[in-house]
Image 1 (cartoon, rainbow, N blue to C red):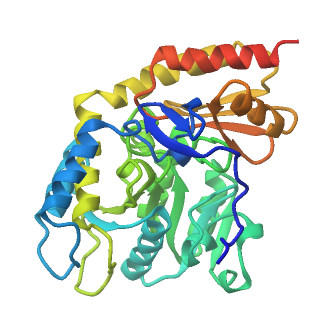
Image 2 (cartoon, rainbow, N blue to C red):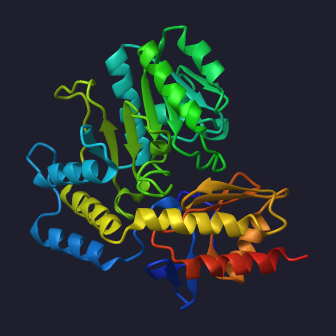
Image 3 (cartoon, rainbow, N blue to C red):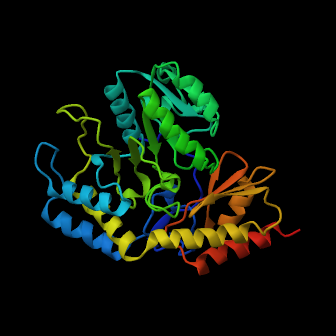
Length: 375
């Protein structure tokens, strides 16, 4: 049997990783500034993370959600304390797409409505409802075109107000920072007004923090810059440092009932152990502060380099936009400078390194980029 060929692959075979570095099968070491799509939050192979999972596996690795799992309650308590959302409740699942599916379903359950407002260049996942609110026709099959979704320009609060006045919207969904959309940040006033309008219209505000959450922006959640309280927050990627895990944080006011949501693997023992390890390391190593400090350093230094059209971002979620396609530059960074980076559209390099990135490691990238862009 052959693999179903849907991924354009880099010519690298990683065999080990530690901190912010990956080593391939030839012994070549690469600086990882992409973290596997923002998944590696506390660094590769963190000893506390490994120990937590190994110890849990020695006891019990899995049973279904038909039994009491104290680790789920421990994780919910720790996540509430670390994020500052202690009065929210947590539903655990396996991925970001699944988190958004459940968030949209909850909004529809709570309001009895079905239309959703989303935004241009949004990406919320590749499953049914999540794909419906994703602004990319190229990955949407005919089956996914039946969702009742209205796409509006990001930061256009007048357009949002006009749509909400129609009275049929169950949810407005927006990313804390658009990732695949090119590291585009919702304005603080836009998020604040969005919350006010949603409350007035009786619809639910969903903040997709799957990529921008878990400390990546320099705050636990990117929306906290605007000092708002969304009805629903979705998380995944950095939540368990590579172990498949997602979550939906639900504000009081949305009532739960048995059978309303469900998952086979979500919140299993190993996932919870991994999730707890991540929160413990984030706290003990001050990784959110580090993301803020190193992010500001990177943004400042990158804006001094000529040849970059625009530098956008917050914390360790950074986009470098160029006037031309970045494919060759990204290949050169990998092949000649041994640096992993990501991409967004054709003209944007995306940086999503582990939150443990040091200034010394950041400087490795800055110096390499200066060399490659020198006239």
